[in-house]
Length: 516
Image (cartoon, rainbow, N blue to C red):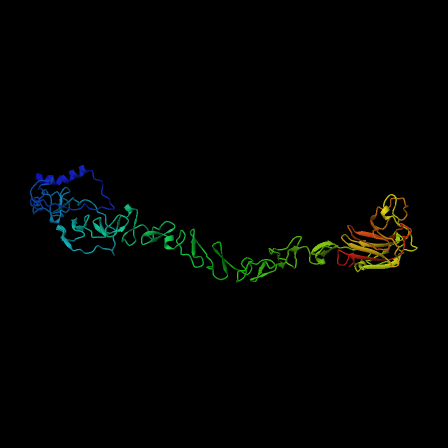
């Protein structure tokens, strides 16, 4: 009786003293079964050497009239559990294998994998359970359960059942812990890997057979490991770039990128990718052309507007006007610029005046002078109305009697060329030319000793007797100008009168000489 009570309370005492933690309700791997085969103890004897439990054979512990537990052993006092075993009874498995009492320990189920089952490795004797599969050789609560190492390769014991090694803690045929190596279990559970579809490699690397390989070493490019296309086959600093003629037809490789040619890009013009330059800097319809349109003008093919709304026909740039109608009233278009429209006086000849006085000068018409005006006459018996002061002003240009006057209207920039030549039989005629601004000359009435040259431009008396005089002049202002033909008497052999021929040629700044 004492032995039975002792065996009943022993496991309880051991349990209280050990301080073991509560079992994991998620994963309980039963303690490996230990085979006790001392040479001097028969199987089933709990009191042999090397044990803490003394007593008779197992046959004495379990009389035939006592309900048996999983191992056929029950308490002699009938105080066991539902299956006839007491909470303190030791559990003796088949073939004398002894393990802790698991009767009252709940064992969570293994996650079922209906398509993955451990292979059939035969049956073993499991005592009360009869024959159990070799993978689950222990009988517990009437069920066959696995032990720590009973599951076949590729499976592990959890909750009394063999589950496939398909997670990061149990992977592959050896059920390795991938997590402890900083790795993952491959999706098919075959092995531990560094990467897979759920655990990609770092940028610039690609997962190949569970290992991260450098993209560059695989001939791939960039952090996403892309395959560079044929048009940009070079991988430069992680970017696919073009090379040479890789861009194909109608495209150029510039700064590593393919630039496609269009029909309106002057730097990539048409199918031949022409670079349009002067004199044809514009790309139109796939060809280089001159930019001479109002909305595409000049080297940059810019739009004309504002003060210069028109494009010069030569494509040189934008201009204010192309014709007179483009200018405001009172202005006309000259050289593509709007200028004041000139209305000159004295456009026609008027030789009706006598020409004897400054106030009666002959009018040389601008249109006639443009073609060159010519007049042959003489100063004999003419008036003497233009005498420069010899003593106080121009002794070099002092003149005697007889003079004639010619008048012409000039615009700013107009040029006149004047020459007077004595007749062939006038070898003693000392001819002189003078030019005045306005219509007053030396004021006609001024005396010989008066200062009367305020309108004088210049006088010319450079040639010898019988020789001609000439000058050229460019007008700086608009108005009338008077030419005087005079003579000088400086000695007995000189004459201050004679026959001569005058020519006057006008070069106008305007094509029509402001008379059109």
